[in-house]
Amino acid sequence: MAYRIESEPGRDKFGNYRFRIYRDERLVAHYWHDHRGDEHGIDFVSGKSDLWPIGRMTDFVEGGGTKPLKLSARGVAYMDEKT
Image (tube, rainbow, N blue to C red; front, side, top):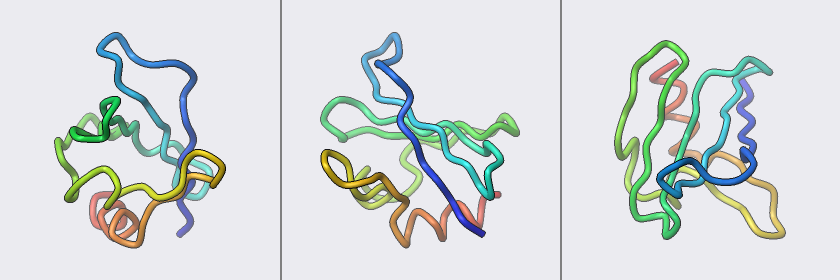
């Protein structure tokens, strides 16, 4: 199963960055982190939510800036378990 993560434009009303996570081209979750990456969470389309899915934000997502975003190996394992 392949996961894809893409950034949503702008920030939410709390100033958090938001992302959509797709599994085999089907939207499965919305992921967010604060402006420093200190706090993060995930909202699944099934209605379940999880604060601090694994470690820090950088343990869940890799890339950014000039590099494409992708889930880390730990992020993929977490998503496989939850979806």
